[in-house]
Length: 227
Image (cartoon, rainbow, N blue to C red; front, side, top):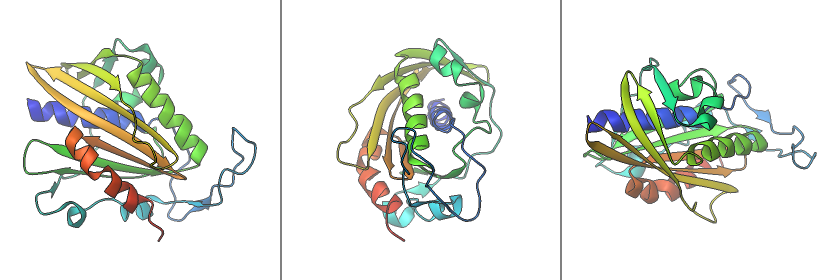
């Protein structure tokens, strides 16, 4: 049951972070020259990266070492998921909890195990900086604004506790971090989730707190490397 809890938490939180929608993905790039909602000036002249380009910036086994095994990509099918006791999350829509079609369209994801029950996953998104900032901030505020709530996944109730953490300073342009504890069937799983926006790229690393802390800098360096 412990493994199922960890998988469910990572899947649900990844879906929640993917709620804000932009436009459909394309094979190429487009410049982020739309006016900033905050300044009225162009947000950036750096092109938005395609999903294919983001794939090349994900961590791989060579980056992590021989103890890490890449997990198969999750099926597109999802259990029915309901969020209970957190109106802010409910207001974001049901698709947020079940991994529906609402998302930052340019994305790439990967998950690893390190030979034990510990897991770490990485998600990369690209879009206009203001959209990435506003969307991610809204999701983290909603999740950490509910200290306790319940997720019912496939008929299984999972008690959730969230805690806002001090994000790592000096990395990227904006940072968010939280600790999630999922409890069911007498077992608990703790997941740390840290997000960093660097220009037009958003990095989200989730999983065992020790693994998130260990690989965050490396993930950001590769995600933002000039190609």
